[in-house]
Length: 67
Image (cartoon, rainbow, N blue to C red):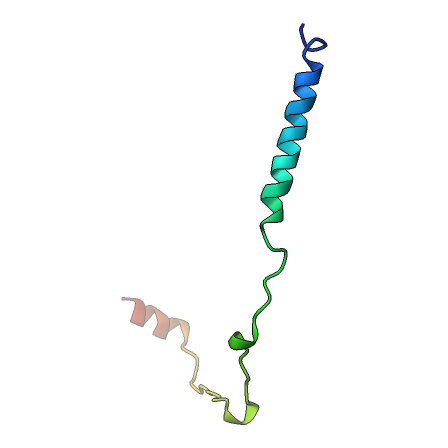
């Protein structure tokens, strides 16, 4: 086993990979924040409300529609 001989190379490779992963993950923002141009205001008075009223179908009516 030449692991003991190559410990310095293994250590340097691990340091290189760790630092490369640190730089790669630092480029990803942790949280996306909307700018002022993307702000949407919702007015509750102008919001459309849809109410659906209908009777439920019985099992026989559902079977009739399926065929």
